[in-house]
Amino acid sequence: MTKAQFQVFSSPEFVAQAVASHIAEVVRARPQTVLGLATGKTFVSIYEALVRVSAETGLSFAEASSFNLDEYVGLPVGHSASFRRYMEEHFFRHVDLPADRALLPEAGDDAEAACSAYEAAIAARGGVDVQLLGIGRNGHIGFNEPGSAFDGRTQVARLTPSTIAANTSDFPPGEVPPPEAITMGIGTILDAHAIVLVATGAAKAEALARAFLAPMDVDCPASALQQHAHVTVFCDEAAFAGMGPKA
Ligand code: F6R
Image (cartoon, rainbow, N blue to C red; front, side):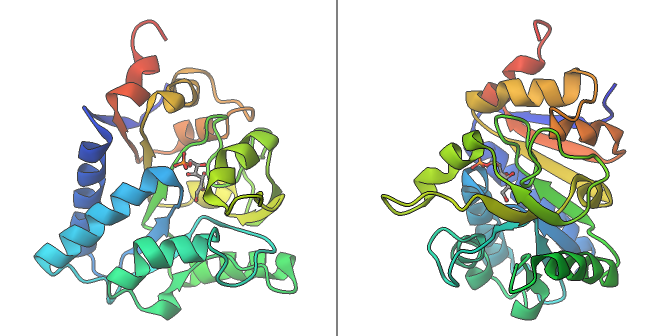
């Protein structure tokens, strides 16, 4: 049985405000917070809300650090669909988080070495305090697709056709996502002191129910979160629909 706490809101806008307020509170209470960050469509409105809270209240990220969950392998620097570019556009350029402490996994010439270095950098900061997560329709977290080991560390992962299809709209016409990405492993994610999972829209209802109502199963990577003691799920009613009595 999951220990996760659910906060359910009537719309994605209210979810975004609630997640932004929560993160703002965490950073206010501990300015040196180590944030684990996610990208994806769900998080666009969340960063927008967090940037707004920061501007309106003078919230500073100057002492914070961040580690993103994942990044494609092989995209040219500055590619419009890279997660680095996404983060710059939606968050980094709007806040005072120092650039040298706003990290994403970068494959470089030696992806394996980059994965170990990323783990070491997280450990050197004392671990992630709050990890933000979205969820894929197939239950993936980060780019940990179904079948990924629950104790996996940062690694190069192959994307499934369904994830490639879901992310193709982020790419310019005629381009498709690369087949590989570096992602924090599920074990890396579970090491975070607290986890905030965000799900909005009916398309996520089935994945959310599988993650938290069904027994843990590597076929649903997000179900690994049932083992974690501090998971809060922020979702809208549409995504929560499968969690009801009929699920
Ligand atoms: C992004 C990530 C992915 C997304 C997931 C949901 O950094 O790790 O797991 O969170 O694919 O994406 P959206 O929000 O686009 O539905």
